[in-house]
Amino acid sequence: MTAVRKFIEHESFGGILLVSAALIAMLLANSALQGFYFDGLNTTVAVIFGDFSIQKPLLLWVNDGLMALFFLLVGLEIKREVLEGHLSSRDQVILPGLAAVAGMAFPALIYTAINFDNPETMRGWAVPSATDIAFAIGVFTLFGKRLPVSLKLFLLSVAIFDDIGAILIIALFYSSDLSMVSLGVASAGFAALFMLNRARVTNLAPYVLIGIIIWIAVLKSGVHATLAGFLTAWFIPLRVNRAKPRVPLHRMEHGLLPWVTLMILPVFAFANAGVSLSGFSLERLLNPVTLGIALGLFFGNQVGIFSTAWLTVKSGLARLPAGANWLHVYGVALLCGVGFTMSLFIGTLAFEGYPPAYQENVKVGVLLGSFLSAFAGIAVLYYSCRKPAEEGLSRNEQRAGIFQASSAGKA
Image (cartoon, rainbow, N blue to C red; front, side, top):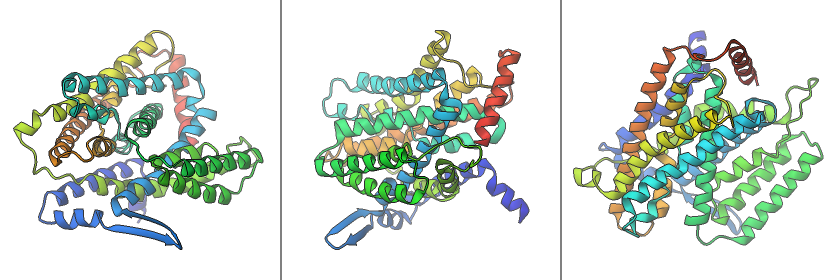
């Protein structure tokens, strides 16, 4: 039992579980059980309290509900790192922020260059601009402690900024029938969280209750519900008090981590990765929508993120993540090309009401671009693990890198 427990507690186990769930979903979606798989995900699940009700397919409960908890955890981790950790320095915030902007712009430009003469297909310009944070982090954790902790934080920061950008794109360009009443309720909820934070309330119960109300309001507003989880995290108190080290943010973060790693992310992967390959053909592969998405994901992210990171560091605006080298950064840039579920989601919004062929082209393009990015990223990071991570750094920078990575790992 001790050996099993150690394996489960190892940080790479979450990545293995995530990838395994995705592979099982792909097998089911392309087998005789595909009807059972897709019908199950489309089963309507309703929560009813008197006249109030939420009725959604099981798939959306996973994407809008469980993933809100994932984004809550991500927000907690980012807030902690910004206020007292690795991202508390200005240059380490600038680097992932600028890289994320480029990681959204370059794929969109590639897609636009291929589809500029067709107004209908141009609706998919944002599809390759999204990074699937769950899969990118899942692949990264397969390398365990062989990669610097600061590099994981860089990938997480880029992916988070990218996802927030994607959510804003959805809200601005693909949202419809926005409910101002629901948005007003959500705003009131955030105001209540702000007052709780300023009053130094450390009991997590009122934060959780108000957070649920905010999630329901955002869900009903027409804005992607996962944004509620991320924004709520920024109101959870983080007070550095050595006498009481388990402050509210730390308690919530440590409580959520095993649930997200061992349950939420694998369920999310299983529910979203099952894409049928029956529509794959040479004609579909050469379709402008398919090409725009695949090339945007694979080339747009690696070129945009890596070149922007290089220019930002060389110009002196920021530094490389502690203990990392340029090969590490290039591997991360490749992993950011894994669009997968978020890209598929944006694709359903972009071509809603269009013939089914548009959605099939989106699926093939997202799968092709995401898998190419994942395999290339794994190959580059595997090779980078065989080279000294601190190659080219001075002795003082190496010591700083070891200290920062150690502090981030203990936080």
